[in-house]
Image 1 (cartoon, rainbow, N blue to C red):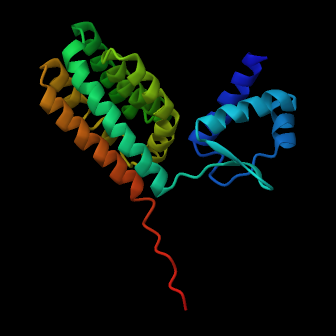
Image 2: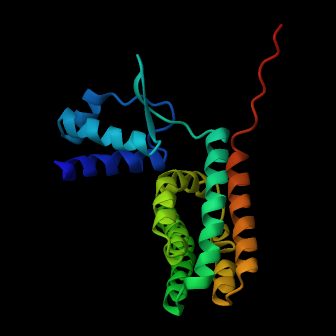
Length: 218
């Protein structure tokens, strides 16, 4: 059933996002079906969905393997994210209601509380939720669909980044300033702060993936 597929999908997705299943791990379908107590059918359907989301890839002779976060994949994600979210925030300044701005302020408060409680998983979900709320406020259904395609990869990168912070207060970072600029209806300032925020995000993640030079031919 689709519910069974969704359950399997959620379990595997979470394991990949939180790093339990690392890049390069082969998904042994018989073993995973046994572990999850399901037949191969729902597992295959779930893996198809995860392949669409970019979390696994099916390769000849190797089967299904968890994709690795690489410098190239982070750069690809960042370049598309910047375009979508900069468009979103400019539209959000135009269209957002005071109630919607209050939702963002509430998310920031929750982020502060999660950081204090050192709840990395909740903080990651709130961080994603903050950016999704800006996309919702943009009042553009196609923009939202495109952003949702990135969401799982964004969450995976955020989890990787948050796990390296000594203090989770850093995650709250410039989110309050972004809200203040939207509340002030200052489109240029909101875009500027968000652009810096996203550039820092990409830089911190890519620092984990140094440029690998081709070995010199002897």
